[in-house]
Length: 214
Image 1 (cartoon, rainbow, N blue to C red):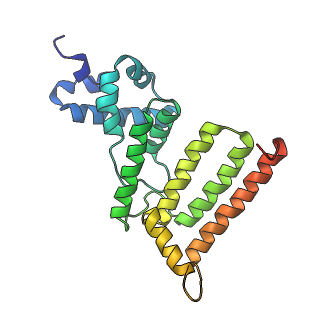
Image 2: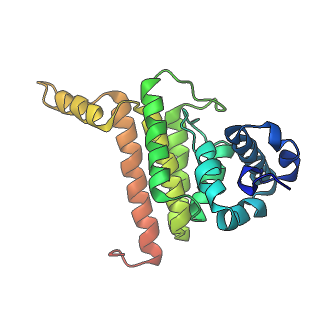
Image 3: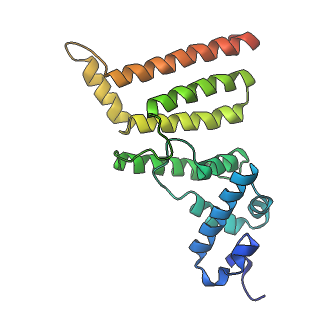
């Protein structure tokens, strides 16, 4: 009874041993349990949603930092990425905190350009092609939340294909185009073609149900 509420874990099985854990370790265990529950049920657990309302200090200063710890993200969304996207769609992650997390993860990948893409045997280009096809299907449904989340995944894949910073990529492209015999690298051409084809497909699909100016 003398234990502070903010030092207690979110889940009973965690809080039973919580007194022997440091706050950071407690939050990490809560995150692991919450991600596991989303993976098994497909929904954010009620415990997490309640904590975001009634235990905000713990949720904002311990749980979210443990969840949004920068790392080299896998090419295909894993359980933790899906949990983060679910919280973001539910407006439970402050926009600035989420943006900072994404930028930190991108920097991690840029610093480790040889990082392997785990949990997939497909090339990043093949994954991008599938993601663009899925995005075109989402355009027909018109779900802005789903489209926004999917665009984040597409952006991540592009960052994997081109691990350098956007400025560096632009300079490389400019140098190539200013050469005596302008010729973009083959990978650039393939990615540009995929994006342009997808844009046209999305425009045609959207125009069937909505006025073109929309």
